[in-house]
Image 1 (cartoon, rainbow, N blue to C red):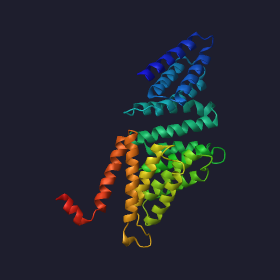
Image 2 (cartoon, one colour):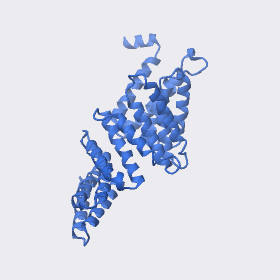
Image 3 (cartoon, rainbow, N blue to C red):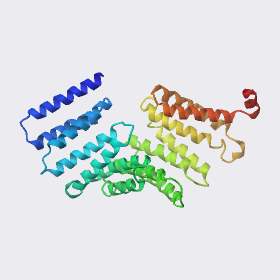
Image 4 (cartoon, rainbow, N blue to C red):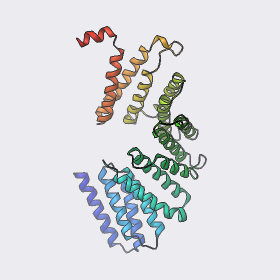
Length: 332
């Protein structure tokens, strides 16, 4: 309640200051946009994001009709705030999509290359989210990412290039594998993760590096291939690289995600790749330890859905690891 009140006071004070300022309508619109961006940059609560959306809306209301480029830039920022605001339904994401599309209608003719590419990248995110809800086509998200890559290339914009490669890969993997092109999309996804990793480093771009390594590990785990063990070993290497950044103290949620992914990988690998028939009791034991560590973190940080999924994996793996005779005795 205190956060809501404090944010509301700030918004009212900002609106009063802008209204009383001796400035043109365009200058006031820019002032409101700057204030909204400040709230959005370091939000302390969801109310800050909601206030940013409100301020962007006010800025659009007073923006002069003869300044379409300024209005487009405000709409692009509004779209990012809507994307960041948690919501149960698709409405904010659809509003974000509409804001990006409206902004691009102007930016494409008058904007800077980088702001056009940023809007395309964010449009792709909105479309990808909506595609997951059955309200957009994943191919349209992929198209937006590919247009953004015309500007965000590996040499001039390595960070954005890596993020786009990650987004492209996850989009490829999100398309249902129901046709003969599914294997090609899986291969494209792995290739995109690897392309991103060519331009980011552990030292210079740790967050992006860890994200790509974690997601590459996931892709390698689930890709349709006759080289299942080889891919699994490569996935373990990728997870270990991600864990150089994702630590229990520095990034507990991301750390838990990655060790849960690693646990799943271990549980499906033989202890000795040269003798798969010997089974994997050591890997299963290591997987259970990682799952339980991840479960404790998810429970501590209030992630009930993830905690439930990991708890189910622990139960399933524990049941599989118990010899049949002991299972029968336990049931009795």
